[in-house]
Image (tube, rainbow, N blue to C red; front, side):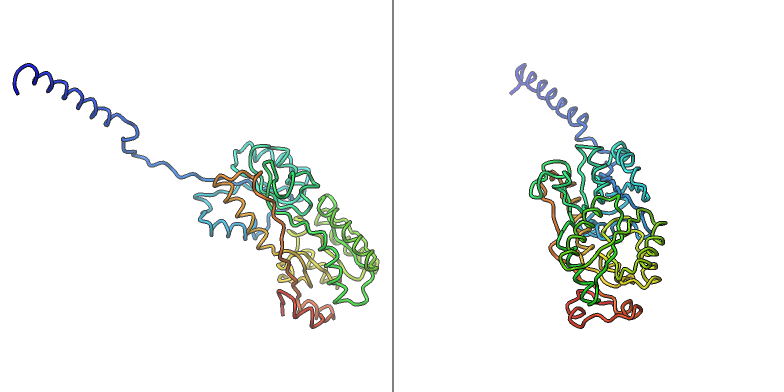
Length: 338
């Protein structure tokens, strides 16, 4: 068909086609980017009252995150704040983490958890607590924390009695036990009360050596030895744990049979340990981090407590102290250092 009608349709079609093509050229969504968008880097705050040792922070947590696909320095960055045994610095360090804009905070021990919780009600906090987190008011309940705090609690009251029983098994005449504690840590204070209560139940007298700073350890060991205390329990405290080499040296020098919480300390020369698996506990922290970064609300993630406990014995250390573990204890140990 020719004539005015066809010319008019051709003109309109040209305009419409031109507008469509113009829209395609000018649409930002269709424009190729000369600089591709950088991937998100998650910034994880880490708050601890102790010094960070040469081993670095929580190797098992970091390994779990690697297993889950995170790469430190590319998709994940840790922002570490250590109080270096000065607990009074924790509130300022927690506030600094909040100002720095971290996406999540890992808080180790009750003083750090409290400082982080006071610093923010919105940034997720994954805790590692040695105390009852419900009694400590960190969470509403273990099943449903209902706030911005969740994580792992190693609080198991029965462990106090189990450790005293383990010491008595390898020292049948045991009647007097010292306890090395950092009473600035509420978790250590709770554990001391549990050890004292368990001791009374099995006719063991206890004495508490409150050593809050590493430089106080030598005097504490001297007082324990002069007092005639037969063995030692080292409480679960991040400051004591980060200074384990000093404690191991002093226990060996004073020839003091000592029980610890973590198997790793026995592998480093300690006599005996009974407690949760440190690798399991720290690995679960990595799982919490992953779930929260994927969108889970911390208040809906139940707080976990350990269900598996390890007995570790060091036969070399026992021989150096003139001791011999009962065969039954060695047979049931999860880790035997020969």
